[in-house]
Image (cartoon, rainbow, N blue to C red; front, side):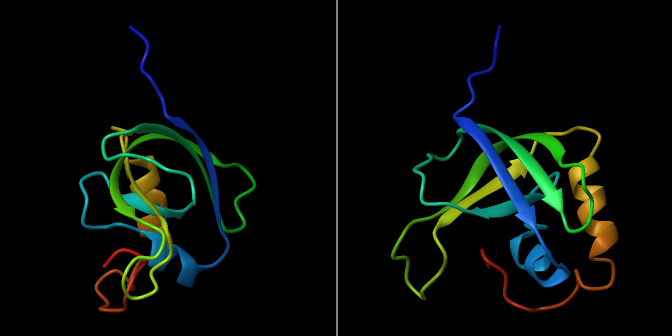
Length: 113
């Protein structure tokens, strides 16, 4: 049986501050908030090409939409989706947490919470 994917998303994070803001450490396996105007529903399956900072090779990750911030959301939040990583090897989560070591216990606002 083939898995039905809602789409392929290419997302590049250019610096640690942006990575901190987009990382969703509170979801199992980790995830990222991806700014987008495209419409998704909770539970949609997506394929994410995640490029982090200077790494020239994007990580190919499957994921599930677990968060939606609609356009015009209260507090001038950026419209987009939160994608929880499916990868059982935790490569996405591990790569991000290595870069953000020491920052993850902070209380700075993120794109989701």
